[in-house]
Amino acid sequence: MATVQRYPWLRHFLGSPTGYVVHLKSGRVVHQGVGQAFWFRPGTSVLSEVPVDDQELPALFHVTTGDHQDVTVQVNVTYRFGEPITVSERLDFGVDPDTGACTTTGRDQVATIVAQLAQSHATDLLATMPMAHVLEHGVSRVRALLVEALGTDARLRSTGIEVLGVHVLAIRPEADVERALQTPVREHVQAEADRATYERRALAVEREATIAENELASRIELATRRERLVVQEGANSRREAEEAAAAALVQAQASAERAELTTAARAHQVRTVGEAEAASEAARMAVYEAMAPGTLLALALREAAGSLPEVQNLTITPDLLTGALGALAQGVGAGAGTGKGV
Image (cartoon, rainbow, N blue to C red; front, side):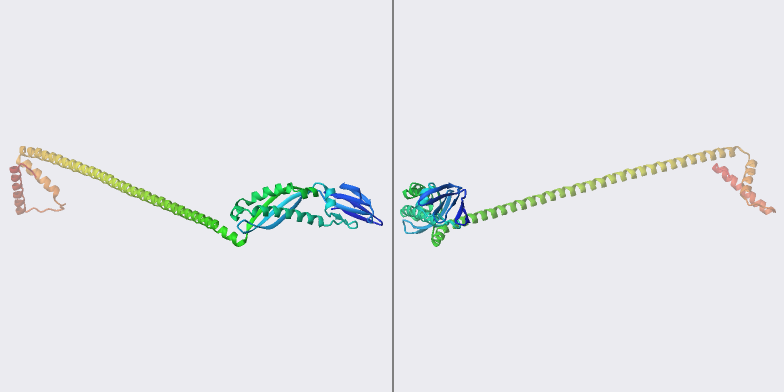
């Protein structure tokens, strides 16, 4: 945007890098170009500033299709002013010499011209197409048509306007028709969503069943191992009991054998002692048999004296002596008869 500095009877104009200024004085061009800076008198000068950068023009209009349905077309046109002098002569881009403010009349005129041309060409095209075909192929066909039509339009070219590009943003029917057209698609999308949900649930159920089967298999395997453990522990206990019983049997047998050996040894010892005593007694009796009766009597008295209690005083009467001798004689005679002595 240009700036104008005010001085008494004079003004100083400073242009912008995107504005093409045309300074007319008395009907002839005094200054022109981009980024101009000059002095001028406000009473005798006419200023115009035409933008030379790319301009964006959105347009929205309604069109009736071949089957009498109303659709809304939204387009965006990119253009620029290729011949600023021609544009300043055909359109109003005047600049206020006191404030430097640019009028919007020229932009409004361009917007009206371009929008009317776009609507006219789009109406001619879409009026021959049914709405279903318009919604399916209308965007590309309208864009191709407007690019060619606006790029070659004689009025735009004569005005100095160059169309750089056209974008058709949307072609939409009325709200109730659009909802009706969206219903099958929504139903299809909902059906696909339901199918995906059912498949996800079925997959979840299948996975849960697999997990349950794995858990059951793990429990069965654990129970089988536990059963094997119990059987092995029982076998180990039985084996330990059998080993303990076998050890006890061996110990008992060893004890019995030791007792038997001890008994046999004792019996042999007793038998040996008895035999020795019997042999000693037999030898003694053999000695006694060879002795005289008086000698036997003396020995008997000696043995009897050894077994009697200690006597301090002894009185022997004839009766006592007769009885003792008789008893001794009987004992000797018995001993001689049996082969044993006292």
